[in-house]
Image (cartoon, rainbow, N blue to C red; front, side, top):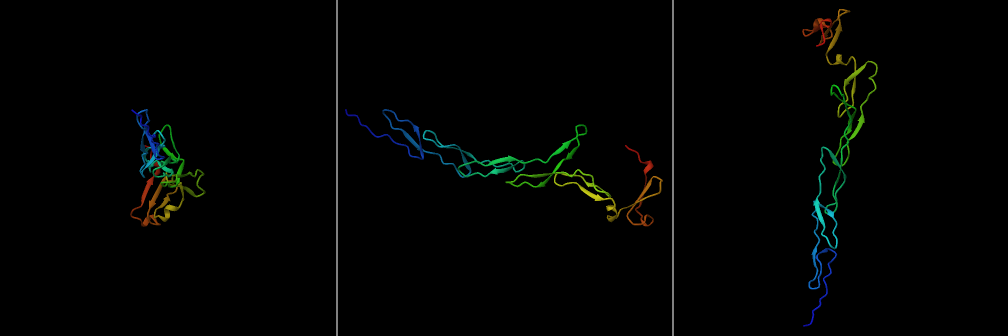
Length: 187
């Protein structure tokens, strides 16, 4: 009997060889897997291996921002941890103090901006009205600022007493309160 010889199949560019040719059988070729639009390539297609795909990741909006956008069906999204504004923790009391505050809010594609809290003392006639917080620098206020808010104070000579009242003249204020500073003690 005459032997029948046939040409071997040649896999196309978009196929890969799943079974090699033998003396008695042809090679088997199958099309490469195509990644979906919500996937990216994890293993490139080859002549002897299929393309492998995985789901494109989402950045955790609370902890990360996108630094490299995905290319659908090709490459994954890259995420980077958001900058955390600095705090200090007292080793003994555990009290937390802001060292820097969020000056620029993060977006899906930009990092958080932090700025050092102001540490210089407030100017003459000023006091720290609001301490530095996670999202705002400290605020200095004027010493006499409470007067504009309707609270007045009067020190009664050297008696160790102070009167707080809501009108310019304590004698006209039914809500005036006198505090004996000598009677106060630390608890």
